[in-house]
Length: 205
Image 1 (cartoon, rainbow, N blue to C red):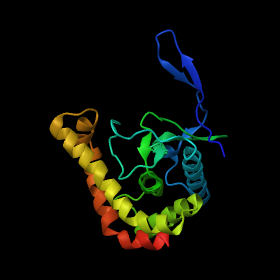
Image 2: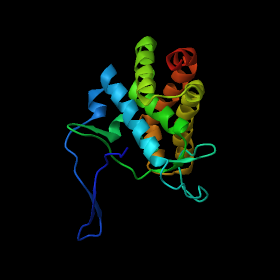
Image 3: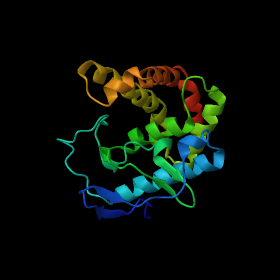
Image 4: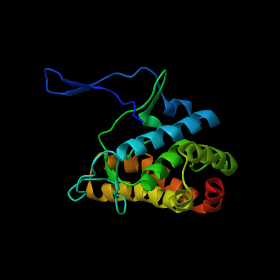
């Protein structure tokens, strides 16, 4: 099955890469998404991962990946989040510049947390239902479901550690993001996910 992505339109007179404009609204402005939309998100992520299996995986050595996965075996988007999903007549993920070798688990963990809104302050039972909808929409098999709760915690912690270390080294834009609210957000998000791991386990069963 193919994947709907913005079409490349070549380069403009200034040499800039031009892509198709996709009409719609950002999923970020629609959060929290309802059950049917979350199921659809899960199916879309599955389509992307299944299609990626047909792409030869390049040597992962030398890739400058911000949050590398252990034992990468699939080309992934690496930022499947509400701010990168356009919702309209088409549902299209944009911003593919971070694509690179990863795994279904690592990619899905980030997407499931962000679309499920598994963040500090969210009622856990509501977040659990949203997480289940994404995972069920994806059609995750039993090994993936068992591994997901732990991966959620690791992925959130990795995001916080990226921001924290970037602040120490001055690596932009993450260094500024760390002190502009993102650092505290992801610190709290990592703690929230770890603290409620039993709920995510129930959602993944």
